[in-house]
Image (cartoon, rainbow, N blue to C red; front, side):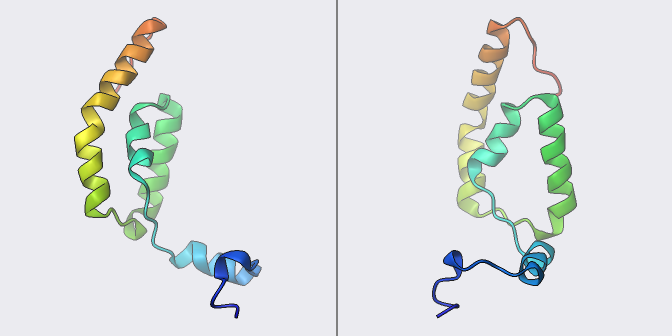
Length: 92
C-alpha cells in the first residue's frame, strides 16, 4: 500500500534526506524564464542553487524548446516593466 500512494505518506527524516541527496531535479519552463523576471539578488540565488544541483538537474527537450521559444517575449516584458518604474535591468 505504501508504494501505491507515496504522495500521501509522510516520509521519515531518513527518507527525506535520501531524496534530497539523490533526487534528480526537473524544473518547469517558468523556473528558467523567471530568471528574467526576478531581481538580481533573487536571480543570483537561484543560479547558485542550480550550480549546487547541476549534476542532478535534467532539462527535458520540451522545457528547453519552450524556454527558447518564449525567452525573447519574457525579456521584452521585463524591459517594459522595469522601464515603467524608471529602472534598467542589468546583467542581461
